[in-house]
Length: 302
Image (cartoon, rainbow, N blue to C red; front, side, top):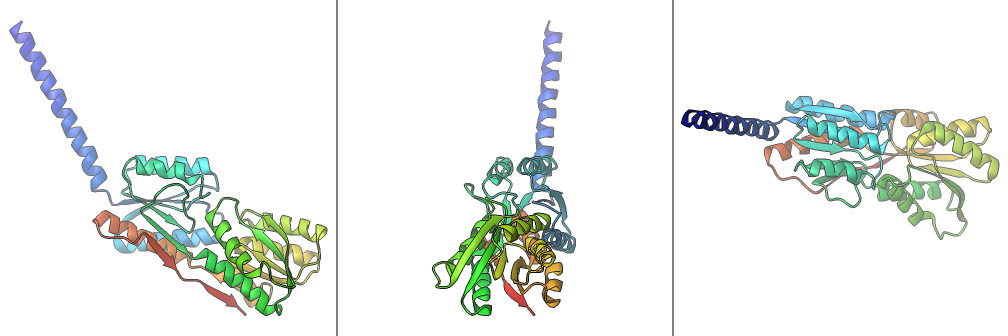
């Protein structure tokens, strides 16, 4: 009997020791991780491809691994991506939200594991994050509105193509734009519709607006993709109006140089991606990181 008890005691001690080693291994893997996870709303958009490339370049420069996943503008896919990255043992999560409200569910997955979260371009509502990196979208909306008024002599009928409903960029760009144009004599926003930051939807929505309300002088699109889609619809309808986009993508800059688009409010998505990785590395090293990091904007015009 004593022999059996001694054997059981030794076996129990071995199991406990094994569990201790396993726990230590998991802990050290997480703490010593040099993996950075990045979830991007969509890579079917040149703006976010540029953001991805900026992140990859900075990670390579600093000697860190960055794993980048595409949410395909789907909030459920976004959460799945975050869960996948957490399972892979990332030290920091960088996320460009599909939707500023829905993203809270995805961020909670990382926060539950005490993983620092950096949001890029679009903010997260209802949840605290470690750092937010973005252009001042309200200021950008103001720049667009003022450019239209200055170019057209202070009087204009304007069409507004909005981004994805719920995205902070949509809300903030629209807010800045309306702060400039609303209440001005001789200025009217004759249509304001969502085209989800998408080029094809920008074309389709613009076609419908031309049919329903053809009397306008300018278009402000919340991003360049919608602006470029709108230009196709306007060209097909043989309608010449002022078009202003937002982001400063290569296609949009070319359209400005060709005289197809009047201006684009240029962000620097590659810089956003680079700054996100740079500050993720600071978190990993235990260094101080600013809560809000702004990225400069400028008007690109011919």
